[in-house]
Image 1 (cartoon, rainbow, N blue to C red):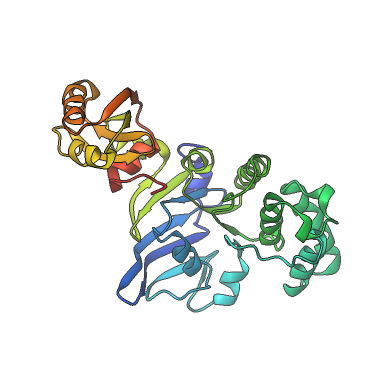
Image 2 (cartoon, rainbow, N blue to C red):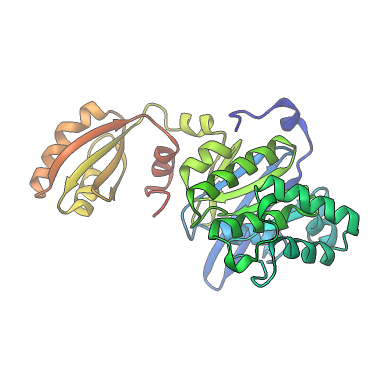
Length: 323
């Protein structure tokens, strides 16, 4: 990941441009006026908790779901008027596995390549290439139904890469995978961005966003509430301190009361205590301890943490990324 993007990336025409996307399901607005773009070689992260609208947004971008309003342009092709070419420039890797369990990994890739009418020689070469990218070259002849969950997800990514897309969309690709596969997936995404592929990466894992993404859009309740590099987003909360309190007792009530203290911007209960975002940890400690005592909370420890993306999310939304 680079924190500011290279000049060539910043100056290049975007591979993806979304403007004013809106999608409603009955009375609920799942995607609410979303706009962003992704340049060649850039990894853009949609960062938000489950239910924030990430999957609905990428379904619209991939042409799987129609927007109520707004536009999507992929590699110069508008999705509304040139959907075939727009979709052809996208490699979509959904959360749900899109593989045939009774076929080998190699057979799955061959099947999907033929669906896309890839010439046989070119397809054979691409199968070898994408298996190398995802670290499955030595497992090509394994049946999918005997593969681990992590191997299946890596094979899913290989399918998305097969036709050499301009834009790769990865929707929560590491959910439920083993540590080795997770590392391999993240390393593969880093390499793809470095090779010039535009990547749209959705996650609710903060450490993945920190590692992979050149720019981030923080999405909450269907809206992008902030966008920028990691550094730009952290600078938005200035010198605010994140205070982590280890405590036992009525922590939900404690968090609600802490949120009303002077200088506090957000507070939330977590396992084993609560987290508070405040102007000054030093000024907060005494009233925080007093508040806890009044509520019957036992405080075992207090830690002050430097501002990070977790603090940004807490500041912008008032809740944790995994809530």
